[in-house]
Amino acid sequence: DGGITQSPKYLFRKEGQNVTLSCEQNLNHDAMYWYRQDPGQGLRLIYYSQIVNDFQKGDIAEGYSVSREKKESFPLTVTSAQKNPTAFYLCASSIGGQGSEAFFGQGTRLTVV
Amino acid sequence: LAKTTQPISMDSYEGQEVNITCSHNNIATNDYITWYQQFPSQGPRFIIQGYKTKVTNEVASLFIPADRKSSTLSLPRVSLSDTAVYYCLVGDRFLMDSNYQLIWGAGTKLIIKP
Image (cartoon, rainbow over all chains, first blue to last red; front, side, top):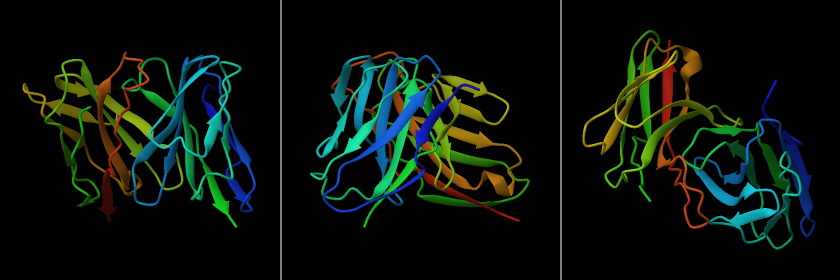
């Protein structure tokens, strides 16, 4: 089955630690995205990538980093510089621009303890 | 970028038709209107997309008036499992620009009662 896989589903991190969230897709999509969602809120764009080895900052990129070494993979690192990292993180991909149909993973819930 | 306005919440009953309206006064010529559904602790799921007039698929219909400043998602004969948050987005399907970012509002929380 084609789709997007995020792992892990739940993640706990101690303050001051970096943590990497995995996102893999087998849809052959060029564009991939990372969003953050806080309770009762819409999605906010962290980073997106239109093509391998290229990525752009979204509205809330501070404290996060990404890489896009392969078309299928777009991992997100939440660094210790992110002041409020506890949130629900969603990865998505699309065949076209942001206004095209996006396919989302099941999300990773990160909790800083 | 076009911002959308939706009701914060709506209630309905099983078997009813539910219509959720979205306002997007600043929609651009190349923008499409897209609706997503999201259940708690899951990623959003695409429901339907349209540009003008009416679009229908197996789960919903989308009505877009001629001026395109609003749109209505219609869910026929809802069930309890349709309880979710519904998001309306407006954006260009083809533009890939680092300065172009879709705006996700808080969506409409739809509660279906027995």
